[in-house]
Amino acid sequence: MEDLLQDFLIEAGDLLSGVDNKLVDLERSPDDRGLLNEIFRGFHTIKGGAGFLNATELVTLCHLTENLFDNLRNGELAVTPEIMDVILAATATVREMFASLEQGMQPTAADPDLIARLRQAIAGELVAGSAHETTAPAQPAAAGQAVAGGAPDWELLHGVVTGVARVVQPVREAGPVAAVVAAAPTRPPEEVIKAAVGRRASDKPGSQVSTGRRDGEKQRDNSIRVDTTRLDQVLNLSGEIGLTKNRLNALRSDILSGRNDTETLHSLDIAVSQLDLLVSDLQNAVMKTRMQPIGRLFQKYPRIARDLARSMGKDVELVLAGEETEIDKTMIEDLADPIIHLIRNAVDHGVEDAAGRIAAGKPEKSIVRLEARQEGDHIVILVADDGRGMNAERLRAKAVEKGLITDEESNSMDERQSFNLVFLPGFSMAAQVSDVSGRGVGMDVVRTNIQKLNGNIEIQSQLGKGTTFVISLPLTLAILPVLLVRLGDQPFAVPLSMVREILPIEAKEVQEVGGRATMVVRGEVLPIMPLAGLLGWPLERAPYYGVLMQTAEMSFILGIDSFAGREDAVIKSLDDFRPKGVAGVTTLSNGQIVLILDMKELLGSAGDQRWLSRLTMMAKQVAAA
Image (cartoon, rainbow, N blue to C red; front, side, top):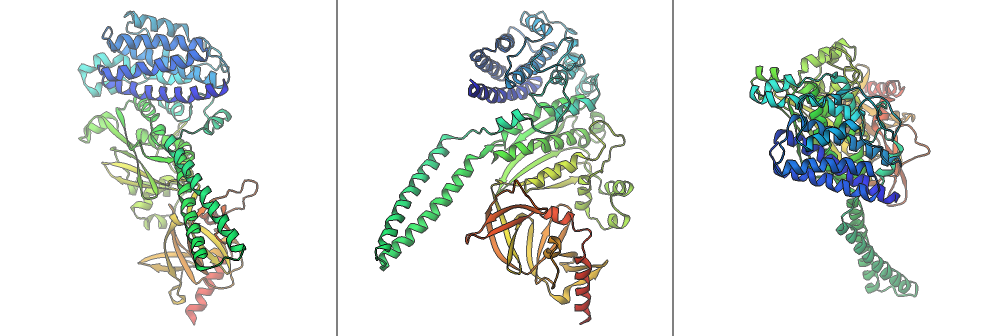
């Protein structure tokens, strides 16, 4: 039954997320029969699975909601604000029941008031103002217990929006601007944002927001859906490799018995080449089994964006694109929180309110676009808004005011570097600090999490037009393209995504600027950072070659002795012992073990290194000669 339960929770969770998105669409198109049918089928499917698990109370709630949608799709009832109130409360309660099942407990009965309002809605007797209880404060309760006298937190979040539904009818005549103003919630926006960003579907009612995963989630994260055609491909390749192995064993026996003629050696060469090709194909096929459509991640965001926007009196539509784009399953899980932060940032700070958009000559409804696409061996994710844009000059002034940069640094920054100031810890443009905004931690966490995935994030913005955050990620974390560099005879691997070019370090081109050794590359003065110095090795001679590397914060030249080409490294993590500055290890074709360097950690420890003065002294000696 445990396996059946987990399968049900995964399937039903996806169905309910789809229902949430369709409810957002239903508010905009209340007469859409197709949407009504799809939502009806969603509740009907959940009810069937719950019945098989003997979850009686969940069956009762889904059955009543299903009956309500049956009347709506048959034209016996029309979608009204009061009916939307009840539906939102029902979906929230279904999520709470899922949480009880996940903890191995049968769900308790839904709030009697909710059941009564559902029955009233089915009978066409629900009147305006009868759903005011939805906004009652949530009280902490133990998992699996009924919440008396109040609504669970997720229901509370959805209930905040009921103010929107109740005013839709009169507002339709007053126009969209009045709709946004009239939708002002009774609950502070900070609390709604906090709930939407940090709350997960199966959290306990009344529990505090947590940014980490729970043990139950980790267990469920181990499951993955794989297309059977991909498994068939893996099976076929395994069979081909088995045949090739038998051929190699036969050739080995022939060679050991003394047959080393040209034909035998040629057959051996063909078999080895075939094995190499098959192993490469098998590796690619196995990697594809880890790939999942990113739409499974995207589908939960329209409801969150809608709730956040309405809580702040804004009219925002989240548009999804590229949902079929596939990405590594483990990366999908780690992308969830950064994308939520970016969407919250777009809704909270990026887009204007209705009055501001009218004054700027823009449509009253704001559009936030969440898009994914594949470009070569990378996945690109865009979070774009059509809001006020970013003012580079104001960003620099704020960073100087907070002491994050100096006046000299501010004057030397271009537009791209100015935009990147929002990623600095402690940076915020907010005038006041709230529970979730103004502390300058959100965007720093976003960039840190993206970099942990070997990706990078860039900002494109036009004042008055909008802002776009561009996230670039590798297709998978299991294989990392690296550049092999050497210090003496010791090889090291650096991520190829950071490498821009390789250039010789000519002694006559090394200059001292601000007490540091630098080189001018196409008019840009770049610091030289010897790899030996970053690793804490003695700097016995100046590096012969430089690798021009670029991070989100800076560009620099990594000084090395030589390089050994490019490799697609299969990363082996160091779980028990991980030295600072080492991301993992890989094994070369000759069996040699190579450390994969974490450049961000190495650069972070480069502030007080004696090699700086040593390299500067070398530069002076070269200049004097």
